[in-house]
Image (cartoon, rainbow, N blue to C red; front, side):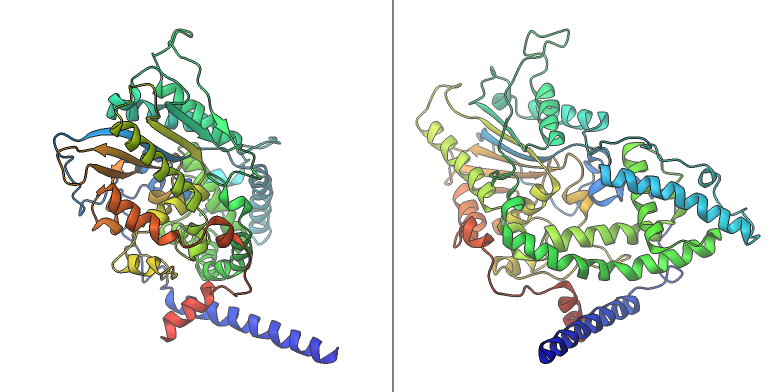
Length: 495
């Protein structure tokens, strides 16, 4: 028994030492705000730097100008559309609403403390003195807000305008399939989208709306859109990795805590800074307020805080570990199978209205991020070869270095992937997949960085590499300790 206790103490001591070494390494790698100050000119719009809390409209037209999309060849026509979309902008959750109430109390206490110490209050922004949470008194949260409804409604109108031959014919639930998760903000997003998609096509009310069907699955069995809920190996990985991710973020928050405490004369803690960053994101995204909580930080600090969120999304939802995206295999298979059915219907020249033309899905960031990774989007250099071998990638570089992985691009509110199947009868490959992210063509590494990929090549290079295991095999817990973030960063530093 004494031996076992001794071993446990040694193990805990080793873990503590690993975390301490990690924090020291990151601190050494993080340049101070004075030596790495970003240009704080007026072109910096914080609403484009809120990671996955960014609104779709703030970033939808930001594209990689170095990529030149393919021109859709003459004679090619769209025959089927797959959409995988995140819900629109939502209210903070009940847990976060309580956090904002605690922040209001803390800010008053910090000001009172400064007065007791007879410090100058001149540097404290006026709003801090009497701030109360905009969500004070609310007991429910997480719902789709009006801005989110508008995002999806407008998206539906734009997509119908872009693909009229797919989406302009009479509605039938088997022709335009609409699916959502059971979470109300996702199903409400599906409704808002379809109201835009079918606007003016019915007889209901002044807007000539029409009824439509939105199907959902139980959270416990939704392998297509909520695969993360039932994948035990992923849930274990995430639980084990979250403390390491927090350790990665700590030096950034500690430095910003020191800087803001000195700047405003308030005894901020790391938790205060975390809550103020959350408030900044909510104010900027939901309320278009950028001169209160966001105004406490300079552009350098905002970029670093954004990076900590992007880092978390990368490690816990993205390329940080192959289980993060491989568990989305049922969704990718469903997309490919819908294309195969569309090809069969096209080859058999079935009459319009007798086969599916669009499969429209509405879910969450935890759905869109893994699906984007399965497609191989947002990779740099030789990263694609690593994910084909299901190897974890290096962490996204810290500002001011440039990076491809940004939560605001990968999965903003109403972020989406579209895969449009084209029939090209005059070409050697008769069917092609056009890949779009947030409504813009994107390069597909598995298809020689083209956005217009032969369907057979898409199947061979995008789907097939993940087919050696099924969902059950991927999500069954194995007695293998996953490589954690602190191990990877230690290897990176010491080679």
